[in-house]
Amino acid sequence: MKLRNSRKRFARTSRRSRQGFTLLELMLVMAILVVLAGLATFAVLPMLGTANSGAAGVDIRTLANACKMYKLRVGAFPEKLQDLNSRPSGIDQASWGGPYIETAIVNDPWNRPYKFTKNEVNNTVLIQSAGPDGQMGSEDDVSNGPTS
Image (cartoon, rainbow, N blue to C red; front, side, top):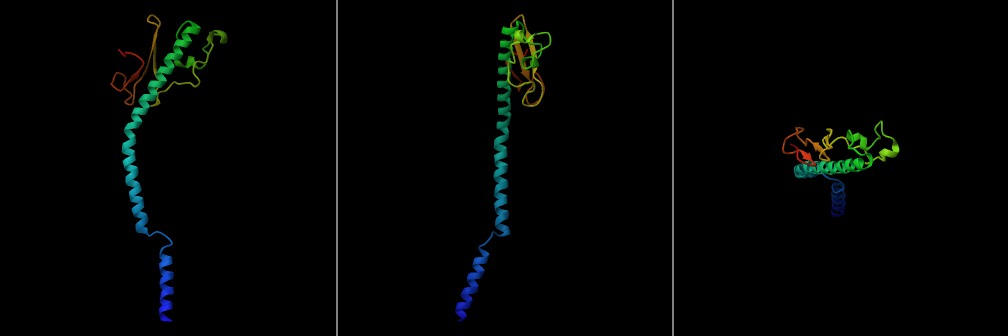
């Protein structure tokens, strides 16, 4: 009889202790997750800068091609990048023939405006982003041509 009661009590105790995690186990899992998140952050942050520079390059090529299409249709490069998306005053809809880009791309991935310079003599446009440091003329600039 005593043996049977002690088995029941032991079964109840062990069943009850297996119902959840202890505080130590939860803290250990949380510490492992924090370490993994920290490692992932240090692995991903350098890639973010590369991705933003790549996105700026794609935007710049898109804008430069849209400027060329604009010039073919209108006869001159746009005065500003916004003219690629919305018709400028003084040009009728039939002559304009746009929009040349679906969405207005006016800021780079760092939320600064692209620098737009047109050269009608050389038949080129220069579109630049100052890059992550925000300073034109540094080595992290993104452009579709020479910056001098």
